[in-house]
Image (cartoon, helix red, strand yellow):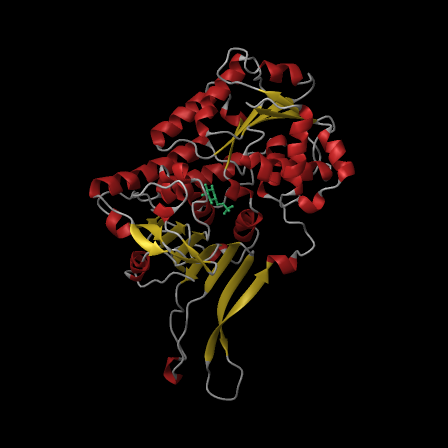
Amino acid sequence: MMSNALPPECRAMVLFGATGDLAKRMLWPSLYALDRDGLLPAKFQLLGAATSVLSREAFIAKVKESIQTSANSKLYDDAFFATFAARIQYVTVDVKAVGGLDAIKHALIAGEGGVMFYLSTGPQLFGPICLALRDAGLVDKHSRITIEKPIGTDTDTAREVNDAIGAAFEERQVFRIDHYLGKEAVQNLLALRFANSIFEPLWNANAIEQVQITVAEAVGVEGRWPFYDATGALRDMVQSHMLQLLCLVAMEPPAGFTPSAVRNEKVKVLWSLRPITAANVATHTVRGQYAAGFSGGESAVGYVEEVGAKPFSDMESFVALKVEVDNWRWAGVPFYLRTGKRLQKRSSEIMIQFKPAPYNIFAGIGATLAPNALLIKLQPEEMITLTVMHKQPGMNDVTLAQVPLNLSVGDAFGETRRRIAYERMLLDVLKNNSALFVRRDEVEAAWQWIDGIIDGWQSTGQKVKPYPAGSWGPSAAIAMTERNGHSWHE
Ligand code: BG6
């Protein structure tokens, strides 16, 4: 159990982009919930910063509305909100103007502990804000900076962003969020692997046939067309969330649950990924783009008919990959990754399929065996299922059926409130625990591997394949696994 004791090191949080979408949907509701649970330091100041000119009252009204319309709306009550609001101030800032951060300086109350800066802004502002904070004298050895993807669009641009951050903050002060690492079910992967003794002896190429990681979304581009069309599924989802999931599945046991130990093991997995280049991009990757179809029982337009779309685009809204991890543990085990928008349903899961039993003693009486599989469903529901072969009850010959051993997290821990992932992430920043944040070398190692794929696509001219909205992606993704005798779990 982690202690709830509050560290003395943070006295304030300055939230840049305080009126933006992420702040509205996630950050203010998370801060409110932390405060309700007594997890914010007593005199903790919350400073909303943005470019618009707003009165404190108008800003607080926005914060109130964001909590009332959020996933934490049930926690809202007027009396407690008044206590929470007493912590909040609003300042207008202009990063590019001389003295543009003065309002922050004036609003911060001096005292023990550092200030946490959270940049909920466009990534093009990460560098300029860090430098402006440094030049304004707002950074000291207790300060922390929190940012979120996208960090660059390739290795070079990621390095530029990291260098600009590094010019103002030391790496130990930098907290790079991957919100998938804030999800309970994702953190539970570490518990499942390293708090139980039964899985680890089997967690390798001797016992495992294949691994699948699926992050499927039912939604389309949702008005983010200009961003999405410059980005695509590989950069948007694989470089960050999917590779983080792969790292947690594939990494060696860390020596402890400490930031260095966990992140050292993750980065080793990234270094072990076999490059996908022009030579193998055709057999190891599939790019797709949704065409018109049906989603959730309703007709859905295609990618290039979305709001704000261009009439033609070759950007992928789906990608499937066959990934190989070149080390002793995983030699020869394919990791199939797929993610996409407008797929049949929202479903994120990891499937570990074991090798078949070495010999079927029931073959003579006509029984076939299916291999065991461990299915870890991350969302929308959290569930862990181990499929085993079981005798069908009855008097006749042995008839076997594959049955699931199910652990529903909802049933097992029904009483516990499911928190927004950002609640955990924000608290970890305040407590100075960076185990679940992404280190600079991880970001850059992930980009290097992704760059190889993008170069391969460009040099071979690999185009997107259409798939109907509401399907599981292009049939080429099925063919990719079938070539090795494997099928996607659906
Ligand atoms: C974001 C991507 O990082 O993750 C989005 O930019 C995607 O395109 C989202 O929709 C998915 O997150 P979640 O938590 O809904 O699975």
